Image (cartoon, rainbow, N blue to C red; front, side, top):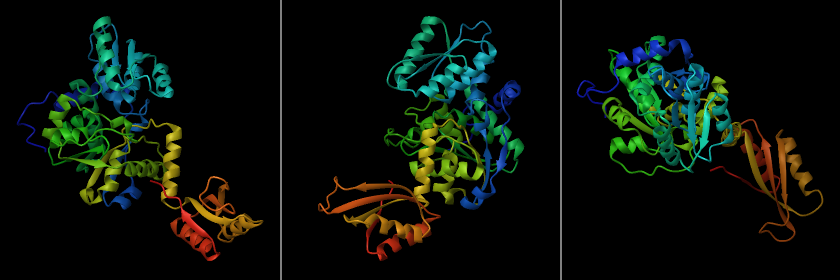
Length: 410
C-alpha cells in the first residue's frame, strides 16, 4: 500500500498538523500516552495507549472540529453537520464555546441519549431520515438554504490536520513508538496520523483497523467487494463509503489494513475496563482488538494504540461485560434434565453447594419442553471462579446422575 509520500502532493502536510496543534492546544485535553504492562504481556508487543476517551466529549473528534472552526470566517452564519456520533458532540461543544450557532442533522433512529448530549452542548438537532445518507443529504440542503457552513466529519483537510495532532503528541511523549494501530471509519484520523508518521524522519508503520462487518476502506484500497452491513459494536467506524481525500491518503501513506471480528471488539472493550479501568466504545477498542486477533503482526513492536472514544451506551457495555464473563467461564447457564418429583431441584442445588458455586437465577421449565409430561428442564445461571471451576461443576452434576449441557454464546 504505502508509497513514497513525496510521489504525489497531499492536501495535508506535517506543517499543517503542527499548525493545527498550535491552534487548538489551549482548548483540548493533551491526553496521556501510557504503557500497559499487562496488555503488553498478553499481546507480545510493547503497548502504549493514547487515552482520547478523556477529551471533554470523550472522543478525539474535537481536534478536527475545533481546527476547522478556528479557520472559518468570523462572520459565518453558523455551522452544520450530519452525524449521530462523536463528530456531532465535538463540533457542537466547540461551536458553542466559540459562539458559533451549530445545527446537527441526525437520523430519526439516533438513540435519545446522543440527541440529548448534542443538544446539551448547545446545538440545534434536526432528526431526518432513516439512515445517515438521508441525514447527510438534508444537511447539505440546509447548508445551501440557510447559508450555513458544512463541516464534514472526515473528508476535509482541516479535519485531517486536526486529527493528526494525536500522532504528534504520542511521538513527543513516547519517542520509541514504531507502529501506529489506528481505527478507520471515514479515514480522517489515520490520514492525519500517517502524515505525521511519514514526515517524522524514521520508519513508523501505520496499520489501520476496520470491523469485519464494515471493511469499506479495505475494499477501496484492495479492490475487494466485501459487504458493508450489520450490527457492529464499533458503530463509530461503521462507514459504508470512505472519503475521497482520505482514500487517496490511505492508499499512499498507510502500510496495511487489518479486519477484526465482533468477538475481538467485545474482548478489547472488556479488557480495557478490567485492566486499564477505562471505558472505551467499540470503535475506540478496535486497535487493541487488532493486537488480540493478529498478535503475530505486532509481536516485538512498540505499538501506539489510540483509544479514540469512550461514548458507549451503559446497557450495551453491561451486555459486553456479561458476555465476556460467560466466554471466560466465570458466568454460565447450565441446562439440566430433572424428574418431576419432590426434592429433585433440591438435590441438584446441593451439588452446586458442594462445589461452592453461586447460583444467580433458576428457570424451571415444565410446559414448553419436548420432554415427556413427567420430565422437566431447569436452566441455572451461576457464577464460578474460572473455566476449570465450571468444568468441575459440570462433571460433578453428571456424576450425580443428571443430564447437563452448557448453553453457549454465539
